Image (tube, rainbow, N blue to C red; front, side):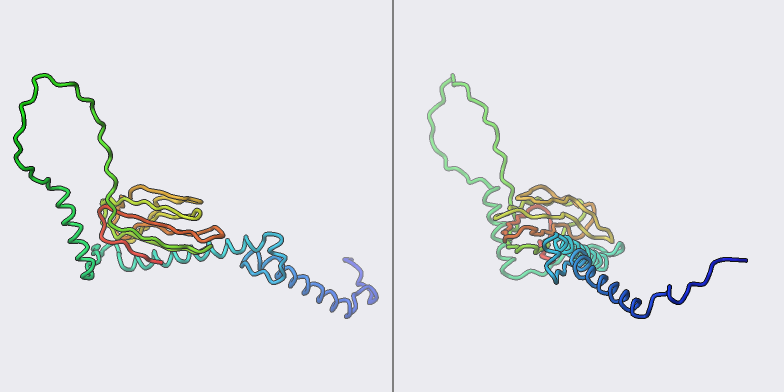
Length: 248
């Protein structure tokens, strides 16, 4: 059976050609690794080519997203370990004397607002039998009563996380305002072996609303500054929760 002729020795590549081809392939692979793979996958720009083509920015975003995912997974694992499905939710009870004194002052101020002062008896003249019609006045909505207020500064690409320790079914109010730019945020919660997401925002200058968690645990926000300048964020919280914690 005839398949093919064996090649002549003159048709085969010489050792010099094989070595040259191997060197060219190796140099090409290293060049592609340095100029394309490292900037686009890991944000490492050794030659400056990645910054010119935008590959470095893509790699930095990939690394930041991977870091955020790792942080979220670490926090979720910690919460699952501390608040399992068979573990009763126990709020933190340790408080300093200064915090107890502030709580007592707030209670006293609320009692003064709720208990009206007894007016002194004053003799008044009898009212006329006919009176002018009185216009109805619409009630003014009361401003929310904040329990905690924190202000923090985020440098470019920096992130932080604040959570409320809450029981299932409780209601907390919040608002945050950004000074100097906008931020990204992710409102989520963990507890009783579960995790859930409330809302995600991109390029937000302010936000407000309520948190009503279906599970006991920690519920709050992860903030990230994606801009190129520092921003200052003021977060205010109120309502039914045990405490406000900074986790990152």
